[in-house]
Amino acid sequence: MLAVPWLQHAHLIADTPLWLLAVLLVACSASNAFVQMIESRLSAALGLQLRAAVAALSTAWVVYATGWGSILVIGYGVGIADAMRVHGSRAWKPCLMWSGIAIAAGEITVATGLAPTILRPSVAHAVAGTTFLCLALIARTLGFAASSAETATAQIERDRSYFRDLVQHAADVIALVSPEFRIDYISPGIEPLVGLAPPACVGLTIRDVLGVDAAEDIARAYDTLTLSDYVACEWHLTNEFQEQRRAYARLTRRHDGSLVLNLRDVTEQRALEARLEYRASVDALTGLPNRAALMQLLSQCGALDDTTVLFIDLDGFKEVNDALGHESGDGVLRDVASRIAADLPEGVSVGRLGGDEFLAIMPTADESAALEVARAIISGIECLGTTLTRFPLSASIGIASGIRSESPEQLLHRADQAMYRAKASGPGRCDYAGGVAIPTAGHD
Image 1 (cartoon, rainbow, N blue to C red):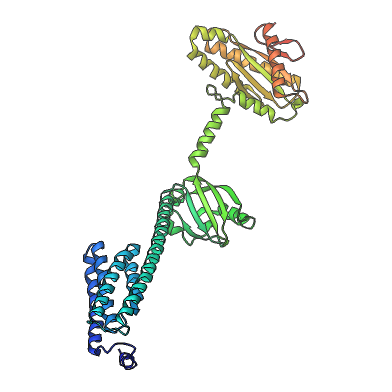
Image 2: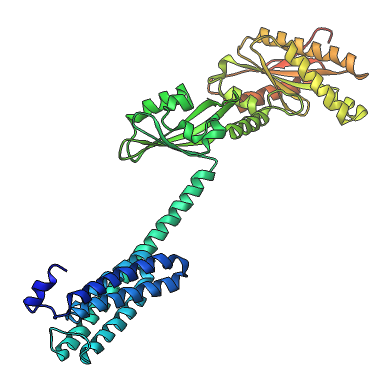
């Protein structure tokens, strides 16, 4: 307003009365304030139309009163940009439409002499039309740019929402650990694992939350970790209820030196694996090691020249099974297994091969010691038979000592052949591989 008199004296703007320009500027401010006051009460579409109309028409009042209306058409872009700030990319078309209406109305007032102009009317119309085309191009460009930005922002927000939901509701734990091994962020999955809520963990060290083992493992791994590498560990954790939990951890290093820590509670998984491993290596009926476990034990012995096996086959068990039934027969097998295990000296292992066959493994190649163990087994089974059933029960045993470079299967085969030779000689006998059937005490 201070510059208006000078501009009028220099014939740069029309000789519009100063009071009228002041009134128009106040009217612009009042109309904008009115729009802001009632816009929130209207629907989004109606509020946009009102803002676009008021912005365009109030701009036209002022610029055409100065005589610069045709030249300042490009200034309508300010109103378009302001409306897009509030309503987004969808505002550019209504704003451009109302700007066109305001400019057309202004040019009509110029043509009829109602509005002053510093240009000839014909030149003013040409300038207004050309500048409006530029305004349309600018508005369209702003609209498409805003639309692209809104689409990208919406996609980022969706991704953040998905990530937030995954992290917040995942059973696995995700943590961000600083180079000083302090927890900067940790997901809610930590609470059932250690009994601490995520906010309580933030700022604490790994030692405070996950214990000494975890802190030491992370410290050892930190200097060796590269950006493309990771380290996997398993830790025993104790929660607030003093329950022991087992966690699988994976550490990854970030560019800034911090660590991403992924934790998974594998307590139940490891317990299941242990049960499956136990079932795979233990005979379900007797509780002794099964054939697979016995063969694995022989394989772990290395060279078998210091190992002796006793292949035990029950004599008379078929008659017991046929007369008393399989359920009673299973009970006899359990009792026999317990008796054999109890009669063996320390260091000798025994397991069930299947059916009524058992195998004892001795860490020695002493023939006399093996024969002594065999006689003790046969004696114990015969005593058990007289106690449990009315049928005689005994055992035939084949004995074989390992030969260097011999496989466990070959050793077991030789013991099996020796057992058949002993059985052919009558019940309660044992045979040493390569020898003859040897009667036990009380047998001819």
